[in-house]
Length: 266
Image (cartoon, rainbow, N blue to C red; front, side, top):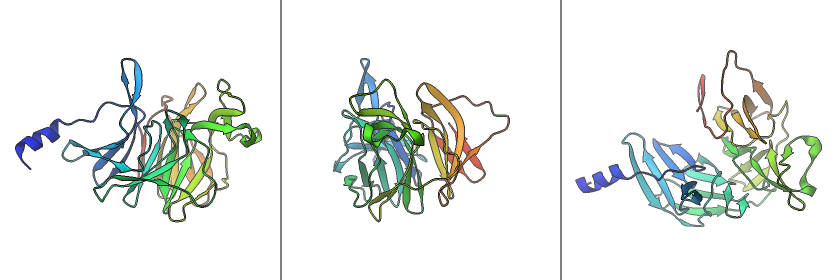
């Protein structure tokens, strides 16, 4: 690598953004999507590029993407599994979506593929949700999106309607649903959970540790929360975690990181 190229790489920096998504693998941080403010307007960032940050070297690189490129979005949910980044949901120029895409991060081609399910039913369109990876499957929780009136079950308490958003028979709101996608079977399923589920929310943080998925904080209506809940990904049992002497602020749009004996929210 010549000195001019090294200098170019060291000066290259990803544009400022919000509502983007990122995954980490082998000391490489992959960043896609989101939006930025231009003259007081929110503008989506290019959907045909992915930014890669080398943690050890402190260098940004950008790569062109092709294939079934997703529309420009914010609030999508991404995860890494078996060399691929998967994204689901998000909000584009037409509103929330329930489409899924995948891209191989290891072959150097960065070719998107739209993933179509063969079995089960996809969740309703939503953004600002979270996910966990466990046992070769992707588990999604919560988010903000819309449902048809015929799909609402107010008795279950799994969907809180945003009272300001009714359009005909379409309702927007927050949910606490759990949906599972199995890439090998191309199937969606909705497990029956046990225990007291968290209140519906979006913009929360999440992390997985072993067979447990954790969520922290989030937003529903005008309320921000700082509660922590755990879902056993084998028994599908919810439990709330009570932290002694905690003076945490209520925060949406944050991240949670977990490793043995330690869980951090930032």
